[in-house]
Image (cartoon, rainbow, N blue to C red):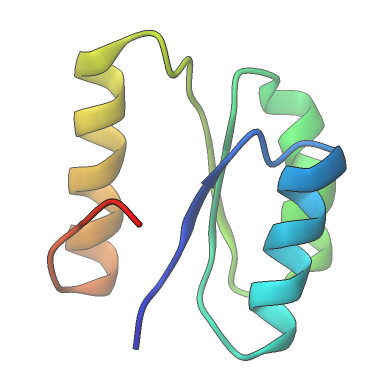
Length: 79
């Protein structure tokens, strides 16, 4: 099963996307530069992981991908 890692997940389209995937039974990871903001949708979605992330920081993006893959197994790929 694919496990999406969603950026911009604190609100709007990102949060809605996380809810959609979660409703379909997927394990989701929520990332946003607004860490306190991303905690609200994460609290709604049982088992969701969340972390602060500035997508401009390539090193931080790679670290977030590696951590999520370690937790859920598998390899990452871009859609």
